[in-house]
Length: 80
Image (cartoon, rainbow, N blue to C red; front, side):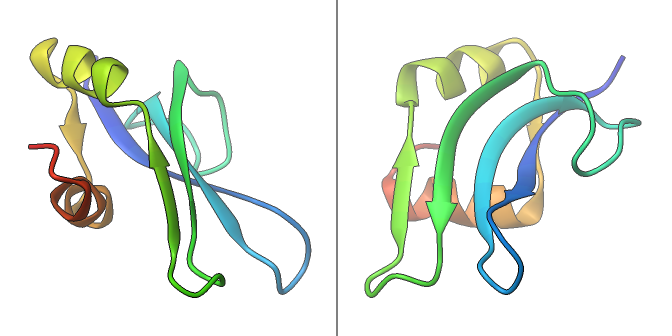
């Protein structure tokens, strides 16, 4: 089973807020998740990025692969 760190959309219409989640790569974008490790809101100025570094490092240590967008968020926060 390949596990990924990726974004899941929450929030209202025309008001996207993204959760950073751990999910099986075969599940749908807003489908079943294993764990929630943070959230991201690009509509605030500056963007709000809240990540649980301990959980993320644990999942990366277990072999979870971040998507390109999540990799950028991790780099921005100094995790990786």
